[in-house]
Structure formats: structure tokens, C-alpha cells
Image 1: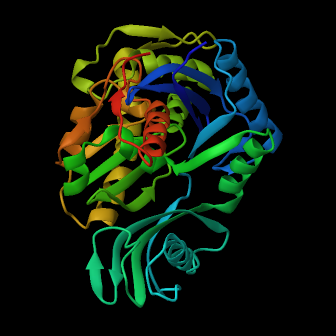
Image 2: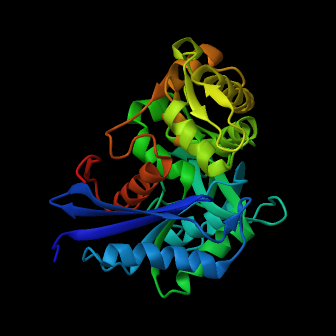
Length: 379
């Protein structure tokens, strides 16, 4: 049996779920197992069946147990569907008689930020401090142990649809699994993909997922904004299925095999024959469909970037399934006129946002207690 300290994170996406297990030994973190499954129980960004979510989780845990990983504690990556980021401020009087700030004062202050009005049906899933102020003087970190009368907090508050966030957490808790932490997907991706200086100077993460695309904005290593588009990889697949007069499963196979973001490389060679109609399809025709669909996604990403950054040009990190499309980086760079980076650490992860999210979630949890060296490729 493995002797190192074991950590496990689960990402329950709308289309697929992933369980990533890592170990810490001598302050070095290594990923040692990855398990995949189709997701059941989530549809259109909401929980459709708690029982099906539980079956998805149980299936992944059973796969892990078959390799001697008996997991009873999980870090949850919370899906970013319809997530919002608000900037909120709150102030409280220091509660102790001797006016020394305690951890309870910090907790009360964060709760005060979280209690500010958000949209109906949402719940707060994260509070990320920008600045603490004690009696009008700013302090760099939580001012625990400082002496003063009034403490203030300026923070970004992240919310999620209550039915989605609570539905996933409740489903897992009912399996008698201890939840160590719940981390929003953009935060998890940031911890895995972004270098410290990038996060400090300002960076964008464009997650080109199956159900939709999204853009997350980080500055001074803070989660400052999020915007979600309507289209993703399944949009490309649907467009191909319609053109080929075929089912989506076959269209997905063709998309992966022949799809490209570079029309110049496509040939006029006939590469596919429709079994029903007998129609022969050229490679160039397939790439043209993919290209037109990608233009729709890029347009949504561009509008999200403009909304979040007001024309400030920042590096854009691409991830997600669509980011595996051949020549995607060049197409985004030409369309957005920005520094576009396709970050792939190794062939194990590729541009799989779910894999990186689980890795980032584990790192986020561990680094609350101690710093660790990271290894992505040791699988």
C-alpha cells in the first residue's frame, strides 16, 4: 500500500468527470492516478439527478479502489456554469475587550461581505480578500494580532447557482465522504496553469469547454472577473453532424480526426463517406465547418475579454477540449491580436481543463498548510 500522504480531487463537469489522485512525499507533490467517467446527473448547467451524480462519483471511486486507492476524503472542483464575481466591502468593530483582532473577527468580516445582496438563487462559494484596513490604515494580510477598533475588508465574492453548488456538495456528502474543500473551477485552473508573475501582472484564462466557453480574469493574483459564453465543443460537433447528416457520436470522431483551425492546410481529398446518402465529403469541407464554428466561439471570447478588461491587452491562456484543435493558438492570436498561450505541460494532461483543475484544486488545498514542489508529468 502507498505510504505517502494521499490527496484526491474530483471535477464533475457537464459531460465528463475526472478524479485525480496525488501524493505528497518530502514536500513534493506528484500526480499518480487519473480516472475518467461520463457525467450523469448534470444537464444545462444544473443538477438534474442527485442519484446519478452519486453513481458517477461511486464509479470513479471504485476505479480508484481497484488500484488500491481507498478514497474517503475529496476536494471538490465546483463547475463554473453561471458563476458570478462581485466586489463587496464590509466593516466591523473589533470584538475583543482588549481590541486585538482575532480569527473570529476575520470570519465575521468575511461573513459580512458574503451577506451583501447577490442575484436571487445564488450562493456564495468563495471570498477572496483584496485589502484589509484597520482604523483607516491598510495592512498587507489578515491583521490577526493587531490592535485597533474598526476593521474593514474589500473583497471579491464568487457566487454560483445554489441548486448546482449545493446539489453537488449534498450528493457527495450523502455518500459519507468528507469534503476537505470546495474550489471554484477558475481558481483551480489558475493554481495549475498560471505562473506567479503572470498572475501578478494580469492574465486571462479562456476555457474552451464542451458545453460553453468562459473567460476568467486575474490581476495581482486575485480572481477579478468571470464571463461565460454560450458555445463550446458540442456546438462544433452539432454543426458537423448537421452538415454530414450523421449522428453526433460519429461527428465527434470526424471532428477529432480531421478538424483544424487552419484552412490552408486542408486538402480536397475525399475523406468521409456518409453510409446513408453515399455522399463523399472532402477534408476541406470538414475544416470549413470547424473554422466557421470556431469563429463563433472566438467572437464570444473576444466580447468577454472586452467586457472584463476594457481593452487592456493581457496574455490569454487557452485550455479546454476545443483548445486541442490543430492550429487553434494561431487562429486565436490572429483574431484577438493578443498574446495567446496554449499551455501544455505534458501529453498526459494535454489541454484538458478538468485534469488541470483537479491538480490545481489539490495544490490550492495543500498550500493552505505548506508549500510543495509540483510535478505534473509523473503519472
